[in-house]
Length: 151
Length: 151
Image (cartoon, rainbow over all chains, first blue to last red; front, side, top):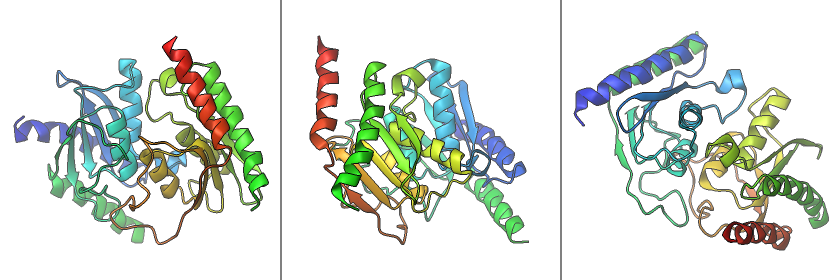
């Protein structure tokens, strides 16, 4: 897949992050495409409004995608997210059988640990992870949010 | 806390697992107590009925507890679950600020990795994890489920 294609879907994830920003949530957004490259689900961080740490953008998008497809197996789907996933979301993505993750900005604190398998017995499939797509825009929105919080 | 107290709450988690069993889900159940030892939330595995890998017993219980308390921070709460949590759930428990996990049977495949921190920058608090509470009963229900599936 060409970089400009990744960027097009990252724009959609950024639009989700913008929704989070507007509702005073940490601005992180995600979309999921099916094997034909059609967006089948989207989500943005709602930890504060839903009062739950399970309301990360990725988990909401995963739930929505599975419900739309009527199957928890999301084989061949791609997840796009504006910030590198945390371990909870990374494990949820693996459990959902997604093998391709595209993210924007890096997360120095809560990112999953790259050199480790998530599970005791690792899944037998490789996961392709592409980072740094529209990273500056993704990071800028987060910086703007945290600056606003400090005012 | 005395072992018989853990066992009392594990019985409640087992009752949740039984509900999963009756709805043909892998029988795993969880309950969460508040700092006074009162159960404030419960959940059982609903991956098939909700068609989502995010519908593990622990995640459903966490969401319910946070909504009941009106806060995603579950400081001082204890999570009881019939099977050792997977990495997704273990990370969600940490993100929710729970520092005490009690589980029943061990999970040889999907259990979180004990010798690893979940996050790049680990939380600065220790988590107390007690395993093996009513382990035989918890494992027996799972075995019964998988035997039934093979018939």
